[in-house]
Amino acid sequence: MEFTLLWAALTGVAGLWIGVRFWAHGEMDSLFDNLLLAAGVGLLGGRVTAMVAQGLNPVTNLGDLIIVRGGVSTVTATVLAVATLYLSTGREIRALDMAAPAALLGLAGWHLGCLWRGACLGTASNLPWAWSGAGSDITRHPVEIYAALGMALGALVVNRLPMHTGIRSGTALALASGVRLGTEPFRLSITGGPVEWYAVGVVLGVAAAAFSAGRQRKRT
Image 1 (cartoon, one colour):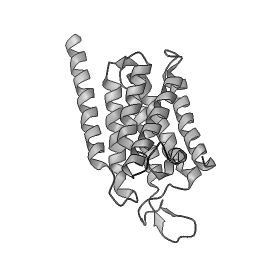
Image 2: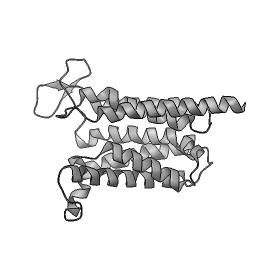
Image 3: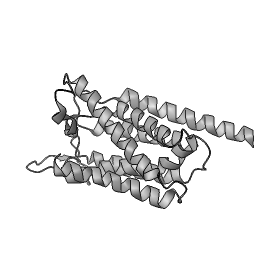
Image 4: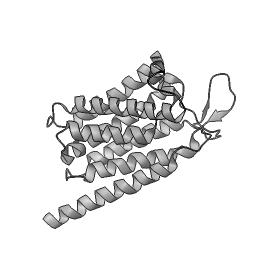
């Protein structure tokens, strides 16, 4: 693994740790470990999916598994990470709610890790905060910084929501998907990215949060 990618991953881990340290309130001592496990399973599954889509055999090309820069399926990674977290925390939706702010902060750290990798920039821009890459005079959107800020703000918002079953986790899914959907146009991409899946994530997250809020109102 290249060291710049390792530092980027550690920045994401630091985000998870900070989120758990300040927002979990000691209610789940193993939450940090569960989040790390979920992130690892999601990343591995997303990488394998991307390799298969590119025509690479993960079994005969084991070395390519760690080349995350070669692509990771965001959809697969998200589904596997959420499923792993759900199972590892005793299949409690409330545990997902508790983990939601820290998960968003971890995503913010991962995107901020672009500073280590030199991979923050997207499409060309003349905005005052745009900057150019090494050896280039073209200034570009710091799209990964946009995503990091969006995820961090999302974590703050989700942390202020009541701890009702499903409201936090649904909102977190909607916000994370919305941040990726909103920043996708500023990324350098031939295919335009999986914007349809991000839109689906927004809809599912909003629906889950609304359903949970409605059910909570009926109980009270």
